[in-house]
Length: 77
Image 1 (tube, rainbow, N blue to C red):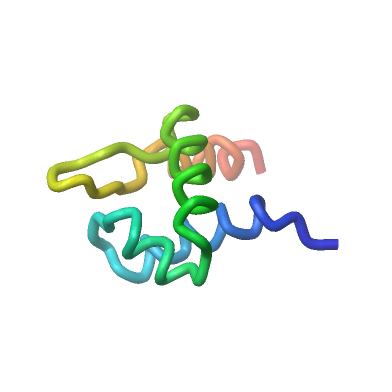
Image 2: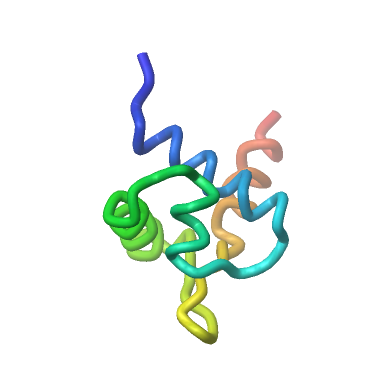
């Protein structure tokens, strides 16, 4: 079973790991092969939870939150 929003969330972070630069919403949607409206909703949800932030020229980029969570998980092993 595939949960589309969960899969897209992972794909979004994998995309930023590859490109290493802020992206516009349309660039993000195109790279993910997702409708602009779906990408907009995903980005807004991740921004609201502190995983993405807006930078100059209407571009988005991940915050350190996912990194910090990963470190906390691995510290327990």
